[in-house]
Length: 196
Length: 196
Image (cartoon, rainbow over all chains, first blue to last red; front, side, top):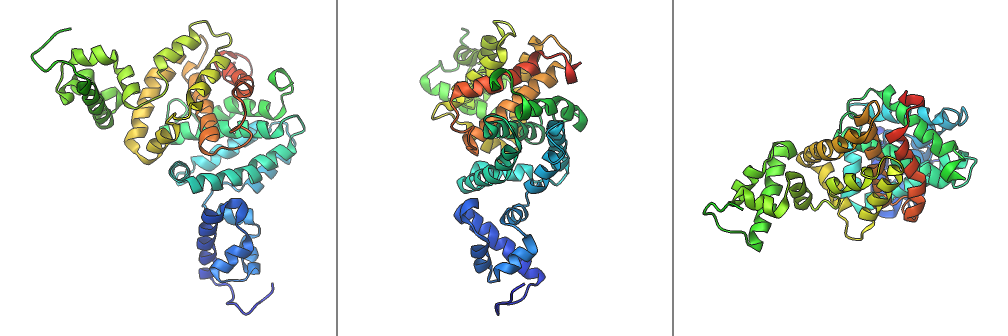
């Protein structure tokens, strides 16, 4: 890794990079922020940011304490092929958010109270989630398919964790996987009915 | 309408009833609040509350500026039978929230920042929306069916109006009706696959 005379990495520079990232993502949006700009804000070399966090996408996930890394998620889900991807996606999503300290409510709160947060999330989801999933779909209107699937999952989480509407709130995970998985699967692979 | 010696209704008593209702719903929850208690808080006769607002459900809808009256919605949707109810529901829901001043973001914000608001919404949706729709469904697990349908619609609204994720944010209404309607319909009427 190149050294430029700036101070070498310490555990506190990792925290400073995360703080700088949160600030730059909020100011510049997900698309506008760059590893170089975040490194400059933190007073470190861009190589150190890449050393700790790899990609901008992963830095965003870490800085927002986002519990899902879409790069990992999409690879696990779509990698084995589209068969069963709907159920795998619902199971992965619920396993992540069912964790007792998952910051789903905090994330929703910041998005509904802060226009910058909504814009940042929009850019991130567009590029890293909808974009990746859509690229794996072989049918017409892949972005519409991917974003409708996303809308169902977000709503499922809202009803389960925020409003806690029964019986969804207490349903065991595999019940929801069995019921919602095929719906997501149809968004990914149906080419009959309205998708013709 | 009975007169009890309290002051007769004026346009300001209507506003006072709404203010008292907001306060009692927040304090006592949707289930715990009563027309009698709200009337007492407002210093009016319960008959006046019923005269202005009819039912507790309608008073809640008005006091929260909730853009949908579930009693009206469910009747329009399910009244003609379950055939096509999925598409009718998606169309009605989007027509309501597409209105430029629909307070969807404000509603979500209060639910994510305020535990009382979440509890109030939970009780209201359970009794007036999921309960009513489930009562119209003739198959196993009607509450699960109704609440999964609700979760998709809530998520659709979140993605369209709050995150404004494309292409859902700009899709014309009938495109979404055509794509999401059949999904909702399956939750209402499918009895194959996972619903066996």
